[in-house]
Image (tube, rainbow, N blue to C red; front, side, top):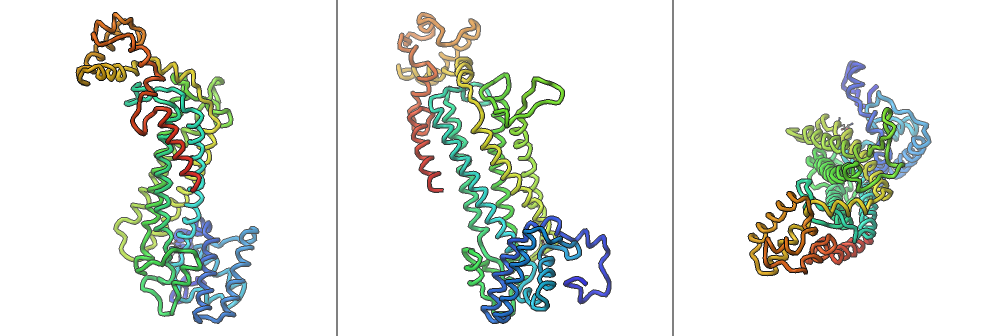
Length: 458
Ligand code: ARG
């Protein structure tokens, strides 16, 4: 008979058993479910809702079930629907009727809520650890390339020279914000729903302060109806995960471009590339492409959970069982992506020569030429026009600005003197960006120092 079978006079259709069951995916929660149940049993004993001896018997039973599961000795049963009832059944099989007292003053509604929160708390810690590794790798990479010149782009058109270290530190900022978003999300995950019962609270003197303390939560949910209805923290987590994926995906897109013959700025290590089954010469950036692709999957998970929760009346509805597949999928894929991405960027080869060559094409020093004229007294808009005309001339003559003779320079403006040449090299264009937070090596060094201090205390 079903654990809830008392009021039924007929078995459920086997199709319904299969359709209703979540054990296929929620068995992942076995450890946190047992952790929550042990705390609950302790609380029941301590509050004299059951005897201390009964509590002890339940706790020992649960501990040995945990061992059995970890040793692969347990096969969960579809007939018991979900991880909560599977474990309760294993417990009563093991310790007899005392096991039936575990569910006193508890509902699966507060039980599943505490399980997901315990699970997600641990996973956020793990993801933050992976983000920290990525932040450190980016800082190290930047530190080795403070002077590595590369083209900076807007509209994917060459814009102004920057350094590779500066580019890496831009990604540092994005992942730092992601890290902080997840830390902030953790605060709302780390609230304890047990004691809410099905929706209204319980008739027992459940000690919610004890449960909060015992399970390491920062507080308990203030309203029990909200405690069992709330999945905001999952939505928030997947939203934060989507942001991480969006950043990874932008980075991957750049790496894919940079790996092409047209750019050749980087070369992926063979260990992080794959070949083609037909074209023998191919070396493909599949890892970066797959991370870019999986971003869509995580966005899908976000839409999935948002849509599940939309318009659900209070409190628990079975729809909410569907929260787990998108959550688990997001956690697993995000962890995989972060780990492999970090390994990929720390092993790739940076082609300084190719980046430097690309920086010499595309009139990337045009703004610096205009700034030169401004310093000689021309209003910026007029200087912009003069240099625009110079660029047009250079395109016709197939020359770079720095290839023009001083006479050619002066034909556009009498303000040009020989001192124009040293100020329009890529290195000088970069070094002369004196504003705080710029690409100049001095400023990138400051960013790196700040970054090192930041990650050292994470
Ligand atoms: N397997 C269910 C879930 O994941 C557990 C909660 C069930 N509660 C209930 N009242 N049917 O949502």
